[in-house]
Length: 332
Image 1 (cartoon, rainbow, N blue to C red):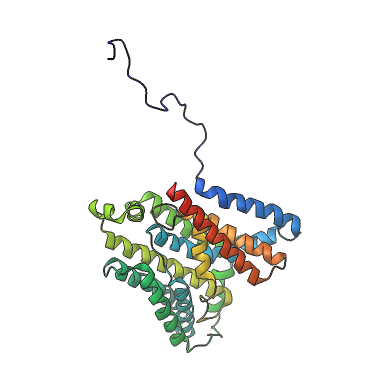
Image 2 (cartoon, one colour; image 1 turned 45 degrees about the vertical axis):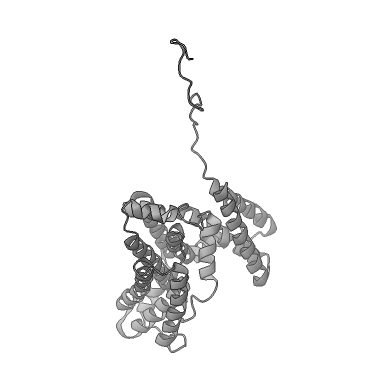
């Protein structure tokens, strides 16, 4: 029996002093260390790696990937996936170029980017309202949109865009504002917008809630269907902007522009950055780190004349390792 003069015991950790340093996000430790190691190794192995020109070129070339992966982050945070992004890039490219041939850059940009955003809205309606699994919806849209891109272009690249529209078009993919590359500026602005949406708005909190536990989110009164429409609309719109930037860089409309490794790198960058494939954990700053890891890794391997086939093996292995670490952290 406790005496009248005894005092209740303190909860565990009550005497622990708060740390003067902010907690480190454990998910970024791995990719962060990998990036540092790559910089050290590549700088020693190649005199061309750690130069202003090379670093600038890598950042500019990775800007469309960053935009694409930022949109993909929304889908993965929900616990889903957007496989249609690559096809959206191709569709935006040919729609923009074909409209530019007759009506100029402004209608071309509006209709091209609008077409990509519309694909995202359709994905969202099928996932959020028709309640079809995101994998199935976006896999189907991958084929549908890729076919539409071939139909619009007649299966061939659209060259000969009119001046001065073609110069403005290239400016979005490879221009500069003073010393700042335009693609890098666009990517930074869209990354900042996505960060604000996820960290500072109710819809951002709803996305995390749905990814954490959709049933609990429904019981909490969240309109899950509407949020899913928003998620895939964002993913489609960001893919559309990435497609516009890439098309501007090559100053043509290419129906196979998004059929390469961009989609896989987009998903890989989000996973490598530490966003959970199960949803509910992660964010666009982690995605930025994942994009930098992929971009500088590929650049360093190119400087060391490592074959593209070997590069694919390395990237794939890193994605699998990142997913395994992600799963292990979730279980523990």
